[in-house]
Amino acid sequence: MNQKQQEFFDYINEGYKTKGEFLTLGAAMLDEETITDALVKVPLKTLNRHGLIAGATGTGKTKTLQVLAENLSDNGIPVLLMDIKGDLSGLAESSPGHPKIDERHTKIGFPFEAKKFPIEVLTISEQDGTRMRATISEFGPVLLSRILDLTETQSGIVAIIFKYCDDNKLPLLDIKDFKKVLQFITNEGKDEITAEYGRISSSSTGAILRKIVEIEQQGGDLFFGEKSFEVEDLTRIDENGRGIISVLRLTDIQDKPKLFSTFMLQLLAEVYETFPEQGDSGRPELIIFIDEAHLVFEQASKALLSQIESIVKLIRSKGIGLYFVTQNPKDVPEDILAQLGLKVQHALRAFTAKDRKAIKLAAENYPTSDYYDTKEVLTQLGIGEAFISVLNEKGIPTPLARTMLRAPMSRMDVLTDKELSNVISNSRLYYKYNKHLDRDSAYELLNEKINAINEAEQKAIADEEAQKEKERLAKEEAKRRNSRTYTRRSTRQDPLVKVLTSATFIRAVFGILKKVIK
Image (cartoon, rainbow, N blue to C red):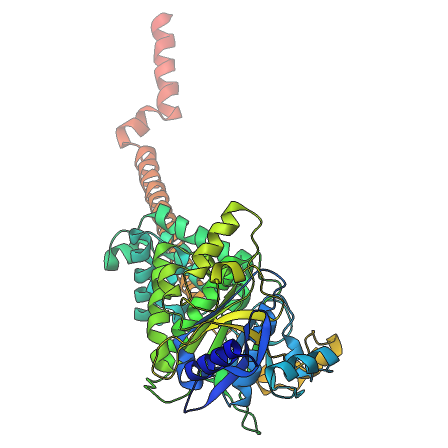
């Protein structure tokens, strides 16, 4: 080791010195050479300060995520991973090893150890796994309105719907419940709603319904409902004291960004509401990795982004760390990017003027260094190498380090169908959450109410018809009585008329007339 390397070695070791528990990510590099034992470490107590893993396709982002998840699990910290590409299930099996892995670890300064880790396979779509669901009621009117990107007027109607359902004990569990209430307040229940809460525009309810249908078409009917997933089940520890890694399978969700962002926001809100304030405990309660993070942000409204930003700021006090994984740091809004303590930047590619501008902006996110031209090195990083800057135990950014990252201890490939099936079938949570419940809720109760209204209306109509028929018959009977009275009176003859019209009288008259004529 020459003098420059020795100075760099001392610089890194001093910058990454820590008194408490830590994770080792790899060893720092100088002039493309790995400096053995110049270890880049992350204090456990700062892991709830959030982070970013960025880099072009194929540069090793997923493997970095895998390394972090493994080391967190080994330290008894549960992890939730968003597996959008489908290549993280290999955590459940040990790495087969490779001479190149051993060579890498020799350069870093410690031997490679193959391990498998306890995982839980989750799903919110049609894929197999422990199903994660949430009810409409758990969202609440404010969060639901922001997810649907509703206007102020439409948000007011959603608030009225929740109030009406609370007042009338109508549980809002799934999408069909919400749609039924929308239809009810527009049709059969319009007069009732107007009397109690004011007039509601049918055009506004129609707009809300269209937004609900949009989420439903992306698979929301599978996500909304019971049994609701309890977020405490994300913080389980196995019998060996290792944190369980929950792998949420999302390989069929990339073309459904609305459902993905809906799920993410609800999950973060539920975690924030459920977990107690932790303070400075020295280690996080749960770490969540959000792969392909641009899917959360690209179609989010300003209101939704504001909600996410607020949660990111507040949730760390609950001991929750959020790590966004994406191709370019600019995929993450600036206000959220400013909240991220740990930054792992893999290589970026400069094919266009736009790419070069993005690289320049990315370089400005990192501390300046006397050892690197950050903007230049960003395009030269090899696979499994990254610029790293973390927060030390005092919350101060560590020196920027070009790092040779350690290799994952688990398999860097997916499980076979049989292996995946075994993992799922051995899960306790699978049998807890995969029984679909459909108890009586707003849909069924409103149908009963509508049927009762219809029956009452039909009975009223029938009673009215019967009354009309009764009145008609009464009129006909009166008419017949009048007719009989008139007939009896008209056929009763006067005695004089009877004499004058009798046959005897008429013959006598004709006899007299004959005599007169003769």
